Amino acid sequence: MAAISSHSFAARPLGLLALLGSLLLAATLGLWAYYGTTVFFEVVRAGWVACF
Image (spheres, helix red, strand yellow):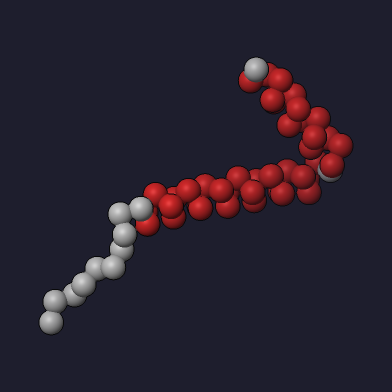
């Protein structure tokens, strides 16, 4: 009997997008825990201002 693949075309990009989102969330929580709330928001704001 032949094997049937049930993977959709969008499964791989959606999986990679979920992985990227999870990594960003983990990095955000890690920096927040390391630096504390006030310093974390100052770093994020400074980065945002530097971009624009």
